[in-house]
Length: 184
Image (cartoon, rainbow, N blue to C red; front, side):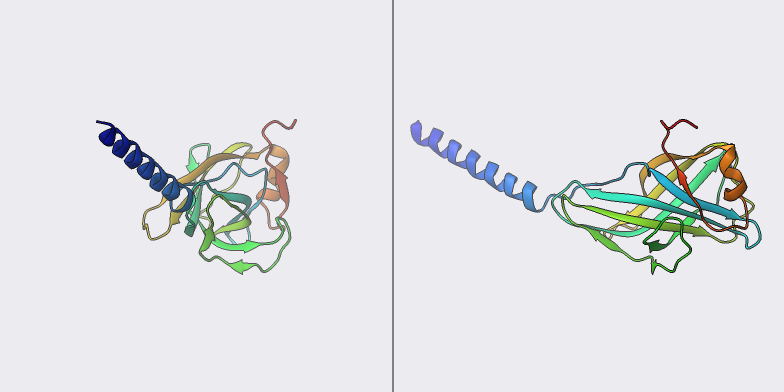
């Protein structure tokens, strides 16, 4: 009887060790993001485009790397939806007119974070304009070889009346505070 117990304990220990090795080295996690702390945006009236820049941090909770294939952003405010904004480029500063790096796939290694300022663009903007209040935003992504879009994060862009003269203008980008707890 003790041989059976010893064999069972040994097999249990072996299976536990294999499971732990898999979890620590090959486990596919999820990409998680939080709401951006700030943003830059413009619904350019003259050139008819909608542009949003978001500082994002992509975190991979698993052990295996995940490749972000593509991103897109949807906005909705007061029942009006924007056309989908496509991942256009990454830039080094939020509110400076600059040439960035064209949008490309990027890996997020296991248990690591990748900070990026991502630019999303739609031309024509299909008459979308920002209004005072909260603008609901949904960021979606495609990962690895999966061809379907998955929601990464839903958040609000805070667009008080004081922001509107530059958000809906022909001016250049300006960075805005997106902290919901800050006094407005």
